[in-house]
Length: 586
Picture 1: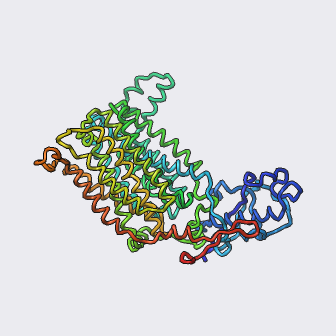
Picture 2: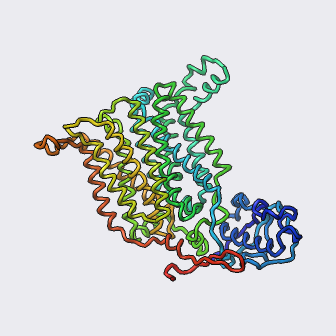
Picture 3: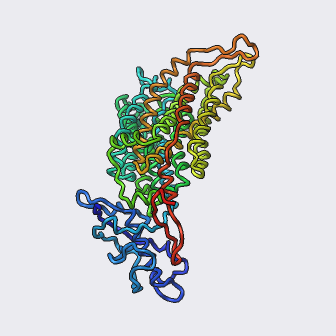
């Protein structure tokens, strides 16, 4: 066993028994807890803390900041190691609750008590909220100028909004190759916090000194220099590009880490839902870009204020993450996560993880489903204007709201269907159902029945239904891929899927643009059924059919679910126990 240097603290006063009000958690008087019970609770808390905080000794040891704020109070004596309930010092001596932390001696994994009950903490929702908000902001920035490309091209002659988005996505893909190893080395907390700071800096590169005239106007200060000087206007394009690329490099740390966050913080019946929220919240960012950008980014002055607004929001979110985003919870949330900690699983380099994944039974099929889902949502999102105009919706505001509805339907579907998968673990059935319904719902986006003409109501209903069913395929199959590759690196799994999805989308979008110019006649000799369908929809139908056929062959063990179910529970001596058994044990 590798040695690790441990720091552990007892749980604070808020976790004591309600009746223990006058004994500071350690008295043996009539109204409080007995000394034996207090020592047993401390012993169990230390054993759990030792399990959760195995900090590697590298380059001078560890900082006290690495210890989660949930665990506070004095360190336990070396004799009070994580044993079973009822063991430990029964002296009933006084232990103050707010002593400064001290460094522990080195201990090995063999010191840890495996008989511990996993549990979740409310702070997991704060973690999920920050990661989702950062994902939202990053995609808002990516598509910030897509809602009104003419205004952007007028501000930056010779440059296009689509070109800026392409550069952003290219940087995103390049960063995905490094995110796994960086997170494994520095931890989720530091990587998310550093990336949020990098994103905020990139936004200030994009906005420059444009905030000064805005603040001056709020304060009632009028200055002709502030209004007319180029110094306080839009930044030069190279500076705008540099800031955009900084955000593109930061985004994978929000998009590739939701499965890792779910594994470390959420129970086994919550993981698909939490991953769906974090993964799909970037769709809300795209919707925000269309709504807010469409209203603000109409001219140079509007663009300046628009970029300042985004920079302020990113800065506030980054500051919040520095205070509220933690690394690990005080307790493992699931038995599979507890098992990984007890076995001291180490994440290999990204390239080794990729080889292992593709050698694992069942990994390729959830990857294909993920790629199918992200490519369809990207194609529909990229050509939403043309899609809506086919169905008779030409008003720009109506098109924007239809796009917003599509993005929100993706998020809602992820939450609803993700929750169902959490409860049933029916990854395959739900995925096949979603793919089949997506195939049906994508048809009206490019089909025109000659007898009825354009049907806006059917088009909008199909668009919303498509978002509801095709969007959840991504988070569900992200969790499925993590399940079949357990105990593999969750971040590496999502990085592979994001790389595959974004690269395939980059190929599919120009093909769909070219195919949209083709119009195929269906049953022209049958007037009652005569219709025509566009080539881009035919292309998406072909991708969906091939994915359905390929995914239907999925037949692999759900290793993580087996680990979560391989626990015998019972009670002994009035204390809840959970003991590890082999996955194939009865």
